Length: 336
Image (cartoon, rainbow, N blue to C red; front, side):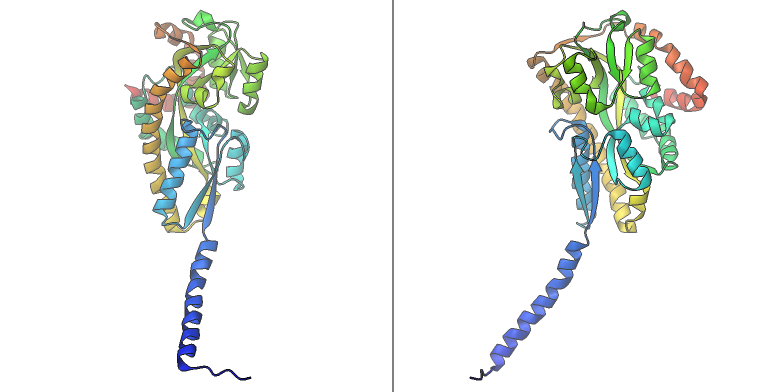
């Protein structure tokens, strides 16, 4: 039996065909969306400063690129420890990460200037340095290693936590086993204070404290809370010994693969997300103290910062002697 195709039927078929063809570019465009993977080693908690930075960057990138870029987030060491993330960025096997300054210094030693103890008295001083000549110089040096510094985010001041005793003077550090990052400045700082500095990867630290292999560590407030260190340590001493910059970083190889418009979107998003993250991190740090106290930590401040500065003077001398005198003077000028 033959079917007659009326003009109306033919028109309907043509309409369907045209609509089908019009959908093809949309599907292709969706498939061609470029994915950028960002990793970090701490939690994805609401108050974790690393997670806050990564989420702010994701929101800004996807907005500023008009959806041509998708940022996927990988917390909790899913892409490796921080040193592994940095090495991956150098070779282009990792797109980007939110990385602790002290670990960036393992790739580019000049970043150690940021970790010098008691260099910054407050967040504003640190921001001034990073947004000025110090930040520009450090970015240039890191770029030569194949890594782009997109933004100097807020990690907060680092404090001492341990299970031996509160720290009120340099003498209280003596004989206490502190986990430190695998960075000469941190090792020298705790050695000069009379402590036992034990370099250790982040992923091993919680268990080491829990089992008593080490007595404590130095760490920003938000990271204590987000990673539940109040469960395994008793004393929190607000030493504020080091301002912790966390770098929003990206592989130069990954960045170079993007279109000029996408690269522009990345840089714009990095600037706006850094500002958002800094504001949120400072505000949350103030709330965190109360939460840590409620969770059983015994908290104390230190009264005599000058005594600590005197004890760590050799750390500055060593940094100068290492050929970084001009960079140190640049940082000291920024904080005046």
